[in-house]
Length: 103
Image: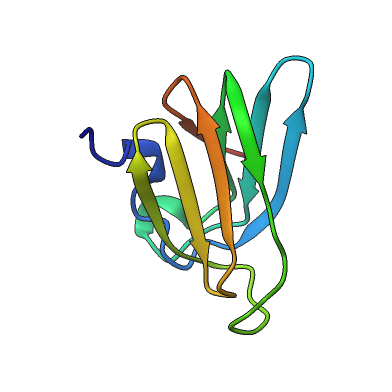
């Protein structure tokens, strides 16, 4: 099994700001305000193309938090962002995600 793509590494404590899914183009963008990792201390986004699934529960079973705990890859192309709230945001896509910095 392929490992976690570089775009999804070092996201522990990254603060999620928004999720945008364009139904027609099947693009999904997760925007973050930053993370403690020295390379991610400013706003950045992670973009997915050819998306087939997006789930974004906000039930907060562990308490309110907008930060990432970890990213899991159970099967190739299906990425689970485990939030510190206990929710799991899942994005499935045919292409590997891309991370870009925002100005």
